[in-house]
Image (tube, rainbow, N blue to C red):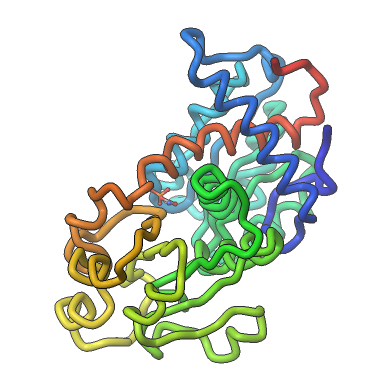
Length: 310
Ligand code: CP
C-alpha cells in the first residue's frame, strides 16, 4: 500500500498502477464519507500545511476537508497577509514552516515547476495543488475517477477537452492521466488557445467544437484563463461563447447522451451555458464530491501509514 513516488508533483511521474491504487483507496474513503461519522484516525499524528500562493476555492477546501477526515493536524497558509509581502522567499517561507515539525506540504503556486523546486530542498512530502500552467494532478485524478464511476472504466473511452488548452494545467494533467488509463483524448477550441505540437502527446486536435462533441463520450469544458493571457487570443468573450461555448442546442443535436464535466470555476454563458452546467448530463458537483475521497487517498498513500481503513 504505497505509491512509486515520494511526492505527488505531476501525473507525468505516476505509473498506471499508482493511479489504480489511488482509485481503489478512494473507493474505501468514499464509503467512509457516506457514514454518519465521516472520519478515520489514520493520520492523527501527522501535520500537514496547505500553502496557497494563488487563489482557490475547491482545491483548498477539498484538501483541508480530506486532511480533517483523516484526523491530521492542518495549518493553512495564504501568501496574502504573510511575510511573502515583506520579501521572504519561497524556500525561506517553507523552511521556517517545516522547522515547526510539519510532515507534508500541499502547495499551489503561480510559477510552473515550483513544487519540483521545493521537493529538491525539503524532506517533507509535497503534493502539487496546481502549478502555473503546468500540472494539477489531483484535479486530473478526480476527473478520471468521476468518469470511471459513470462509465466503469477509462479504457477505450473518448474524452474531449474543450477550451483554453494553452494555459490550462487541468488539460495537461488530464491528458497524461487519461492516456495512462487507456482513454482516447481530443482537444478542441480556438487555434490560438491550442499549443502547437500538442499531438506529440498522443491527442487529436479538432477545432470544430460540434465535431469534437459528436466524437466523444465525455466532454471536459475548461474556463478561459484571462489572468494568464498577456495578449488578446480571441476577439471577445461573446464571440468565444458563440463559436466555442457548449450549449443545450448543441447537446440536443448530438442525438445521444454525453457526460459533461468542468473543473470549475465556471464562467456561465462563456465556455458553458447554465442549461448544460445544471443539466442531467453534468457531473460537475460529483467531481467536487469525489475530490475529497481522491485527496484523502493521495495523502494517506503518501504518508506511508499502514493503518487499516475499513
Ligand atoms: N478546480 C480548481 O482548481 O478550482 P479552484 O481554483 O477553486 O481550486
